[in-house]
Image 1 (spheres, rainbow, N blue to C red):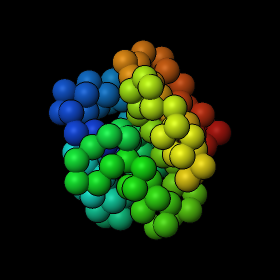
Image 2 (tube, rainbow, N blue to C red; image 1 turned 90 degrees about the horizontal axis):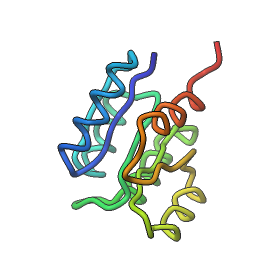
Image 3 (cartoon, helix red, strand yellow; image 1 turned 135 degrees about the vertical axis):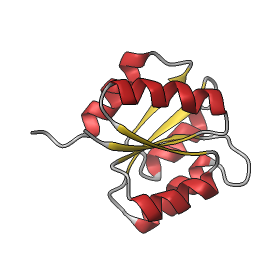
Image 4 (tube, rainbow, N blue to C red; image 1 turned 120 degrees about the horizontal axis):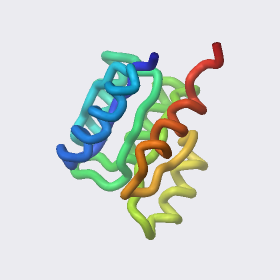
Length: 120
């Protein structure tokens, strides 16, 4: 399947998504903020990044731009809370492939990932 980097400052959310993705056969990497996400992206070159927008140290929008400067075709899906529509638009303009609104359903996450996986 895919190597997926989950980036969120909430550990419980990373654990929840990790469990869901591992059960679906994916390899999972984690980062707790945007700065660590950029480091992990450079070191591990994951297939897909699921990234929260609001985080300490470096927010998701800044990290998205950094990752896209490393790899212009990076597949990044933003995780957002309700009411962050303007930030989501900025993220899409900056190259995010999709966004998922929290709280999210398992199927929504798996569908977003499925759309980004290479077709066999």
